[in-house]
Image 1 (spheres, rainbow, N blue to C red):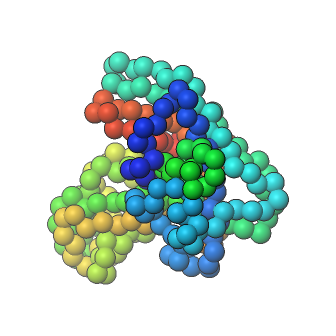
Image 2: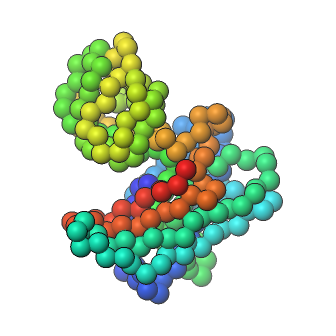
Image 3: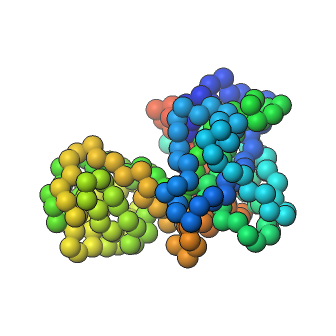
Amino acid sequence: MRLYPSGLTGFDWQSDSLACLLLRTTSPDPTDEISFDPLHSSVADLWAAGAMEVDVAGYARKPLVVGSPVIDAGEGEARFDAADLDFGVLASGQNIYALILFREGDDDEERTLVAFDNGSIPLVLAADAASGSTLIWIEPLMEDLPSGAAIDLGSDATGSLASAAPKGTRSLTLAAPGLGAAANAGARCESVRTARVSTQATPPALAYLNNGPLEVVFDAAGVLIIQSQGG
């Protein structure tokens, strides 16, 4: 889940309201869909960029009900555990590709973007990797990745995971023949799909949205983390 810098400015956890909406695919090619843009600030910015909201029968935006914080002194965290999100049974005909978390307002111009989740996370190379490498070093992984997840670090430096990788790991094992070309430290892959995504749908559809709880965490360094907790 990616955070919008403007979305948390001045946010009051005691009085402000959060809600979620779902974006639908607009093309058979997932790469045509809009991606996270930190310069977007309102829900209206999504529509201006070409995004489209789910509009099948049974769909409605859902409030995110956040409980009182639980202080964990041992972990240096204040946890705001939200109630499960349940979008219910939606009519067929559209594929969901992203969840948007926003702060409520009078209209979409006033509704401030907080987070974007399309089941992909950024992956950053922590050390140079040679062509054919089957072991690459990365910055700590933000989410669990499934076996077979595709990695594209640019300039033909592509590959796939030989085995599942847990959140927080610093290295990835690639299936033979390894990385397709050399890549330098700092190279990024913005489209690697997490274990929460169904590979059975084309385009890939998020599989965790029904009854998938979200948890908001402030860590010891004061960093806000919004985690998908359900599957």
